[in-house]
Amino acid sequence: MKSNKQYTDSFKKRVDHEAGKHRGDLAMKEPAVCETCGNIYVNRRWLRAGSDVVVSDPHTVICPACVAKRDNITSGYVHLEGHFVRDHWDEIKKLLDNEADRAADDNPLARIMAFEKERDDAFTVRTTTEHLAQRLGNSVKKAFDGDIRYDFSHENKLAHVWWLRN
Ligand SMILES: [Zn+2]
View 1 (cartoon, rainbow, N blue to C red):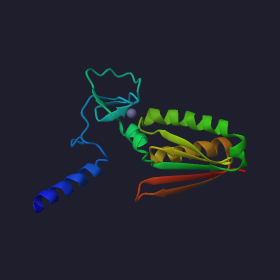
View 2 (view 1 turned 90 degrees about the vertical axis):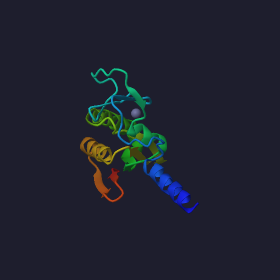
View 3 (view 1 turned 45 degrees about the vertical axis):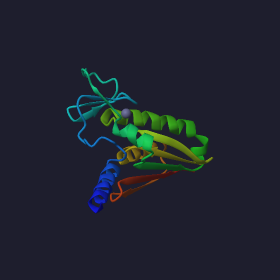
View 4 (view 1 turned 180 degrees about the vertical axis):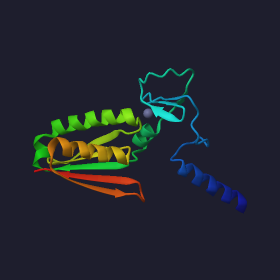
């Protein structure tokens, strides 16, 4: 009985470690296509949906970005604050969307998960990668000036970017 229970515990731990995946196989089979966004996995790399790559008879999977989105696992936060944000939110959002689109060419797993309105003059953008949060912060700073601060925690792999313009 005791050994049975131990087996169950370790099995549970392994499943949790794989973030809810019920397949024991961590190595992704190739070629594969994400059934949610159409990202393609081939030669151990993710390519954007619509890439010029022809894959025959791909496996159907859910890519890590779609898993993060589905399970609400955020890796980066961009906090935008100030009167300027309130008055120019549409412009800022458009810039962020465009930048995220360009980022996806480099890394198809980098994605904006959500735009969240905290107040009239404060929004939070959540991303699937730390790097994308940094990149979005850079682009806002470059386009609209303001004050920026980066806060990275390498321990829990989380990036916070704070941008303020009044
Ligand atoms: Zn996907």
